[in-house]
Image 1 (cartoon, rainbow, N blue to C red):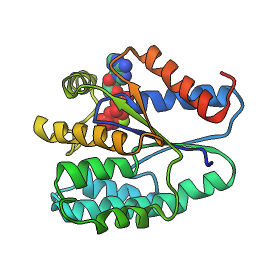
Image 2: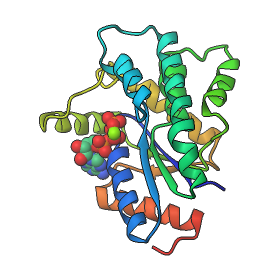
Image 3: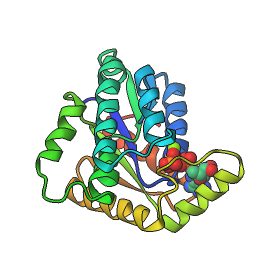
Length: 213
Ligand SMILES: Nc1ncnc2c1ncn2[C@@H]1O[C@H](COP(=O)(O)OP(=O)(O)OP(=O)(O)O)[C@@H](O)[C@H]1O
Ligand SMILES: [Mg+2]
């Protein structure tokens, strides 16, 4: 089993906070950890990220999907696969489940198109996560957190600014994926405070990978 762990959930659920925390204590235990994110954690990916989230032009849904997949293929081959080959843990902020939730479900691109899941696999270049942590939080609470974060100066992206109904569809899609793949995807109760959420993550990693934490 690889040690490729993806962090998923609606915008503002606490993924990045928990990814930083998990990386910190794994490193304290002496493990090699690579932290990364999508979209945009390669030199080419940074350009794709700008096109996707902050560019002058708004991509059509199909274009948006293809740009996310292009970013992923680059990311897997340039960052994720080499890191796993060097025996590091790879903690990745968003991966294919986000594409399923945002582009295929919320943008409704997936309706009646079975080959889209093959496209997702194609972009992964053979690298699927062995564990996905789904940070389950009500959309209202996630939005409150995002608004608070915005007050402290962090800029929203184009997808953050989508209507509440869009974020609701994303949320429903994550729940469905969890039901469909409950072996790989583990639900984290992300309504709790940051320390409690961190403890849940630690427990799961301990169980799955036999860590002493
Ligand atoms: N358990 C929590 N309780 C309360 N606030 C939290 C919790 N976890 C994170 N936050 C705060 O909520 C905001 C969003 O958290 P974070 O940036 O980690 O979310 P995210 O899932 O990475 O969001 P995005 O998808 O937009 O990148 C931050 O200001 C963070 O400090
Ligand atoms: Mg984040």
